[in-house]
Image 1: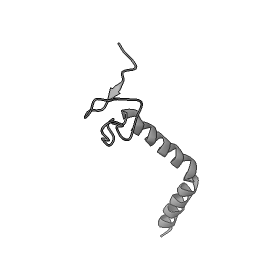
Image 2: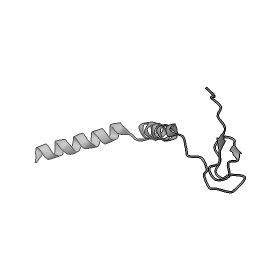
Image 3: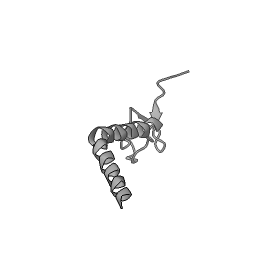
Length: 73
C-alpha cells in the first residue's frame, strides 16, 4: 500500500505536488478536487466563530422578554 501516491493532471498527466489551482503543464483550472474533509473543517470554523462572536444570551433575553410581553396581552 502506497500512502504518498502522487496525483496527476487528468488532461496532460503531469505529476502535481499538493493542491494547485492551475496545472503547470496544460493550464487546466483546478485539476484536483478539494478533499472531502475541507468542507467539514470549514463548517466547524463557521460554527465556532458564530458561537464566539454571536451573543446568544442577549438573543435569549430578547426572545424571553418578547414571550412575556405576549402573555401580558
